[in-house]
Length: 253
Length: 176
Picture 1: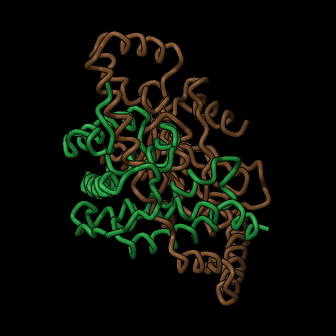
Picture 2: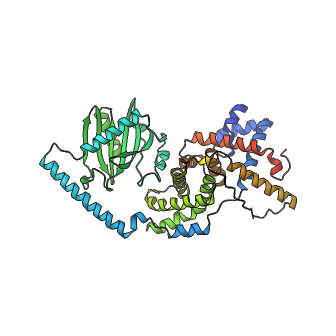
């Protein structure tokens, strides 16, 4: 190893993040290099000094607040009443929507959502705002959504079958926050929108039909919609339908 | 019962949450607000905690809560609030003069960290004070592992440049 190479790995070495082989060859270099040994010693001293800085402990007042905290948005009785009313309204709306579909097959309740999903897909590509978090690591993308949306979207890496995850962002579909995961297929981009299906989402009239799927093609874009585990999924891309179908099946396994 | 899980899983990490929030905001009051808010969110997101490390999970929520509140205001533009805390831990084996030197060293190290840009400050705090792995830091801060490493390197270089010769500050003789 040269001093330059050692310089790049110095922090990982001090932090025990190198694999044993790298660590061994770095140590070999240190044994014969005073300059690099000094840099390691400096970093170790710095670490000791930083760790001697007092830890900021949570004040008792804060601890007491947290111990008695309740997520008010969920358990307050008046809100529960509102939620019940909303659920009723949504299910009534769903019944009405189903009736409409039955009466006039050309009217489809999900058409407007499909339209919104396509618009969002196009906007994400045109405005060059495809990512809020750019990463192919599902373990990084998933926690990014923590605290930004009030649900935890499933994040799967499909790179083994040729659909690598490339990132995610926060988006709005039909007036509610949605997690958007971005996948790549050759030069094609796939946006996968996810939101909780039970929370008054536009397609919630389809509850209780777990295997429902919806495939359509509009303005040269393919969309596929399905519901799973209480979540509503919309995949949209300019990719051909066969491959988008493969994408959907992989996610539903 | 989620409440019980919350008490067993989340409450033990309130100190870590507060320490991290305090370093991010550099203000006791803001840190309290952020942690309180984050814990209420944590209670709501409890089902999303599946076998992950609860501390890193809570720190992620703290980070996102802070980011949502403060980043738009420009965190670096906020006034620096220096809290003159005294380290009450005993340092046996050091004579009074060395103790004074040590206390001064601790103060100047804390000040130097507080003056770092927040991107460097948070990785240093997560690594040195929370002892998180690079992978955990990447997840908490929402950055790639390579960025964790380069920010740690640059943050440490800055601290070393600001603090000068460390062996004197550590109250010991030069390493030979």
